[in-house]
Structure formats: structure tokens, C-alpha cells
Image (tube, rainbow, N blue to C red; front, side, top):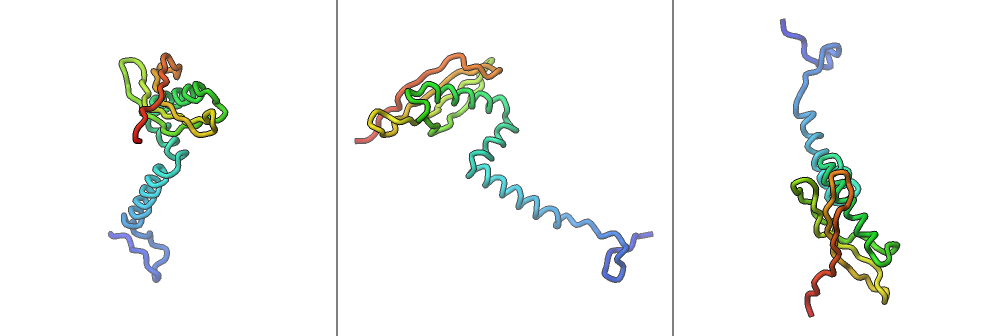
Length: 135
């Protein structure tokens, strides 16, 4: 025997499950999360920490080393976060760009790369001025 359907005349019957009622809010929430991850760095950091914990740890260790390598660490910031690449037994982080206050008060940038062990220890690092372009 078929169960009675929900209606105003029969309020004690079970309401019928409809996928449309669940699908739209899920798609909407997914789109909102993608936009937030793109626009808000803290959301992107949380996503990366959850999905790629080893790469995230290597990236943060290298960024901390890059900020410490600045001539004036109190006035340094990460301009470009960089990229992580896996090696045989560790991680290589390249393209970290740091901006800091220069002698004349104008921001000066340098590029930083490093090798990071799986435990988060920076093994070797390299600091170099970015190439000058333009006029």
C-alpha cells in the first residue's frame, strides 16, 4: 500500500523528498565558497591548509624565512605568495616576492626561493633582486 502524500488536507503524512530543494542551496553555497576563496586570503589559506597540508606548511615556512631575510623585517610584507613544487623528499618553494621599505622610504622588492624539509625546516634559501623592466 502506498503511503499518503503530504497535503494541507493531510498534514500528518510524510512530505515527499525533492532533490531540487537541496540541489540549489548546495550549488549556491559552492559558488559562494569559490568566490570567497578567490577574494579573501584567509579563506584561501584555510582551503589550502585543509586540502594540501604539506605544501601549505612549506609555503608558510618559506614565507617566514623570506620576511626574516629582509633588511627591515618590521617593514616587510609578502607581495606574491609563491608556488610549491614537490621534490624527491622535500618541497621547493619559488617565486615568493617580498616588499620592504627601502632607504628612501620607497618600497623595494626581492624574490626568494627555498627548499623545505617535510617537517617544515628551511634547508637552503636564495634571495635575489627581481630583474628591472621598462624604461
